[in-house]
Image 1 (cartoon, helix red, strand yellow):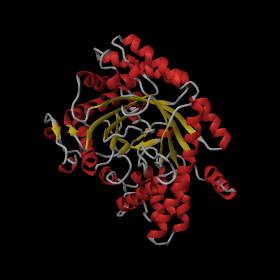
Image 2 (cartoon, helix red, strand yellow):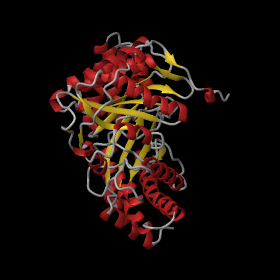
Image 3 (cartoon, helix red, strand yellow):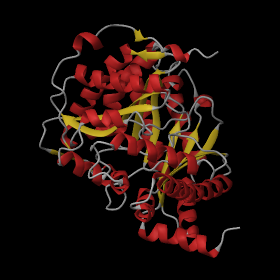
Image 4 (tube, one colour):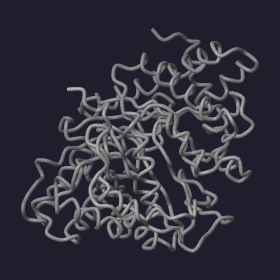
Length: 454
């Protein structure tokens, strides 16, 4: 039974601390849409999405109004298109036709993003999957709400360096194609190691091949709530600090559980998971960086940052996992630069560098996220950064990701403006020395020895 005090506390978190349900994401399997005719395939995809998700936005808004809980985004993820389009797509343009069908369906049902223009190529690529990768720049250029992700490595299989090398060029070309808007196409493209099947957050969401025909996943976020709670822990010991984070994460996740169950019931779609990630926004008071400052850092990037982030991530998981029947996705703390006002300030102060962010990704939920770099950065250098991040995920048996934005025409000292939840970002310097001979070796990096657990 929920007490009056708990209701009042939740209302205060919503009104004063930016607590929200960041997204309700409906996952939709497209396997039954497969056809060898590209026109029929696109029609099947459009019909299935617009039928299953026709009430997603309406019900999300109704739940938000009924419970007084902001539900910021309503989204859809679909089965990786690299699998769905294999029999119908003979050219890269055929894959782009699917991207356009996804975009059209998303706009029809009124959602803000659709994810799943994706490929799972951790060990190797089929010809169809290679075509999809090469089609990404065009697909993200001619659509508005389609998001793309590519899983190029895993702890069990190693890292597909052929795919890593190709993705460096794909990111660079995507940046060029959208250069009139600060290369924003790259903000809709993620490269993964150990990608989860049930992630509700864009741009990396796709509907995993082990999932049911359709599911509801919810991502809940409350950096402001955690920051406010930690004001009571100033000067206290680590035990008090950790207990405060755990208790707060529990409360935040209960909100997500409630919304997920109600959405599942009203849409008549099974409940999947609650992702309890602390996902920041550019709004004041909604920052993971400010949590780290409340823990005791002058700015993120100062000595002790990785330890503080590890503590935060672990306690968020420990507290949240008790609050929901099913916790999944990424769950923890995100550190996107452009979407976090405190991270932006730390970069501008010179305290937070790309190398320090890479160290922080060893203990955060995802990886190098929404980082703007000089437009002149080479494709090989981008591939090298991807390879480093994939190695962290592979060795540590965790999800890691890269969402880099080489902003064409801009350099260190400039800002990139993305708008909305994507915010803005200072252009960060990149190590100028070459890794071309390394990334241009063919093949894959083998799985680590501790992956052999059968």
